[in-house]
Image 1 (cartoon, rainbow, N blue to C red):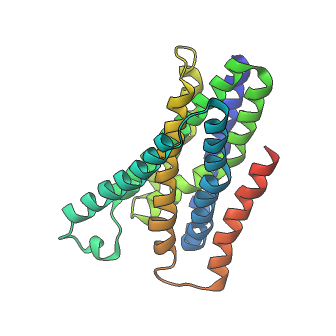
Image 2 (cartoon, rainbow, N blue to C red):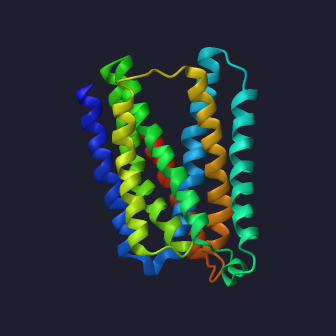
Length: 242
């Protein structure tokens, strides 16, 4: 279990450095967002969805459950976001589709994902060391962009840099807490499958329906489209090697 905790600590630094990168280059936030949107869609397409298919085949589960979870993740986040915006429709921010609470909601969802990443590392090592290392490498490979995503979502919705840093810290700490939690429980394969579907729906919503339109709201170009494609290719390459 000590190996799992060491890998989880490494994810802390990977996530935190990614967030600091976004803060340092926040004047290029819309370009970062284009890349971020590609990363989020790529994580679902090349990581989460293949894993769902693999788990369905391995355990002979029905694919209906995770697909319902996917739809629920998409719709629930859509409802939560629109409820916040409608509630604040009298504010000028609504006109440009930005509100700090939306950023907080998005960041909290990513913190929850990071916590489950840590759980995944712990459960991987419960199976055996080889599986644990593979899971940990996969988490480390995308945690840098997780940090970027957390900060980008906070800043684009008009949260302060100080507040973004606090949520970045929570996101970086979450995998460590997740790995520690596996000392006290084990999760069933079907529960993890439903989680993958639900989180996939969330990723698709914020990537395709929230971040990407906002990234192109002020200026759109082939370069920015290329950054989105680059983000997707980045995840595709990472997923092939982990």
